[in-house]
Length: 350
Image (cartoon, rainbow, N blue to C red):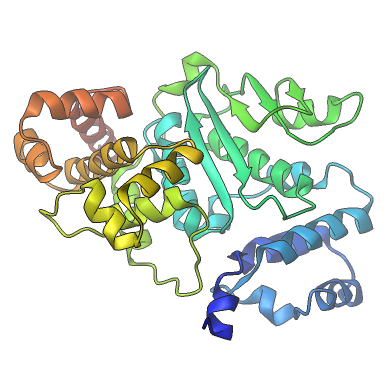
């Protein structure tokens, strides 16, 4: 029989400081803030707790109510452009210190679980490079202000990463929009389309691998290490893909990331594991490759091991297959990746 604690921990949650930042920006009178929070059985102290979390569904409802009280139909999007990387902690600093756009959004996609549950950032290249944001629990609503805030915030972080010359190609939203989206287009700096099949920022080809002027591999490595040390007992993984990803990351060095082993750890059959991943648009093979390359990039950044040694530690028997896999994920060879980041590091010291 499941306990009450288990049931509570299954509720998707979000960092309390996200809602706190929204309330601070809204500048509503204190009695209104207390009344809004009381409607969700929350107190001001719950929101101000820097290490606290809140039910994600309550956050969505409160976001919508705040926008309604203010009478600002574009509140979520307007709010996003004023938030810095500190809003989401280590994940934000990894983003703005990444070497290029695609690695920044991939890092955010892999660490979004430290910020909130029941959501998924996905980096896609088909039919063109884009990042997709999705609330995975279909029962959660309203979600318009959160979706616009989330994509607007990512777009703002990309501007911080690449500089004022950056602009997305297009932005899509699943929800209906105004007949004339001039305000949204002015805030995002590109054409905006509503009633689409996904929430997404579409990138211009020239921006995808453009080198970020403020890349800082030391900060990236430090923040990645910090995320690995995070102890989030209240976190609940909301997608099977994330559950498999976490299981792969937790395998001991030298353990073969086989389908049978991971399935056994998750308490399902191998065929069930494959089927559930396919239903989420993923595959075990892709997750294993991504896990290996993530490990390799950390070793390239943090150690002086040779490429062959890193290949072996990452599960590759020889450098040719490792180089092919590394290039397919990052767009460059391991040697070029390390040399570029070393040049950036030396440039900062000179």
